[in-house]
Length: 68
Image (cartoon, rainbow, N blue to C red):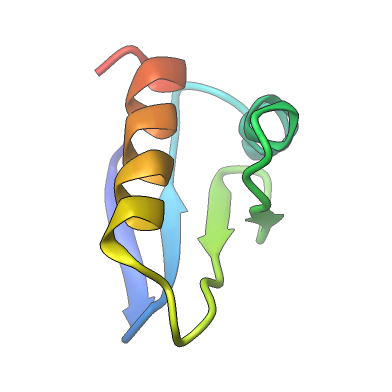
């Protein structure tokens, strides 16, 4: 990941190593819904009532997929 942009809970993760669509597809299999916001940007749009355990789940899944 090369950067993060956005405000509040709405964030775009700029990822240069892998296509954004591949990340969205891989995490959808795990039950995590993300959006593509360009060829190298994955958009996070969590609900306002998101819990820490859900945020941790997304971070862990991204770490696992990206190999960080």
